[in-house]
Image (cartoon, one colour):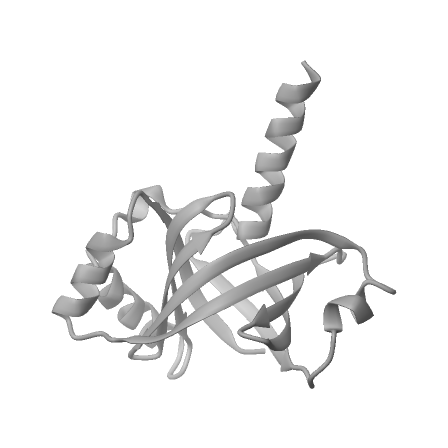
Length: 176
């Protein structure tokens, strides 16, 4: 299974990060309109990603409590069709995350500037393991430094988890 090292940080604005990317000549690769449909599974996370009209099924395992957020993942590109309608027949949907993602690529690191419906703005880094874990950690640290990210306020949860928590918190308030 492929592996990457990740970080997610909530931002008040994407403007400062965009300026740093521009200063370092890291160009926008593309804007992605994403809908992630999460399904209930016994272990890990399983989502159908619908991105600019194309679909992929993504399964990943990540220990959110570990010092470093390593993810083992498997991505399967799907043929054309209404996959959401197909999977609902035999998988239980947990929730759906909608976002607009600006994708930047640098040195085998995916830099995501995300605007997530119901949650706000975030930056995510995903550094792919190519030449071993130590090399990935080194490239990851360089990106943290280049973008001047404050890692003490990182979020150790998926957007799925953040939305589920928000829904649960809202329900608790409503029931009072």
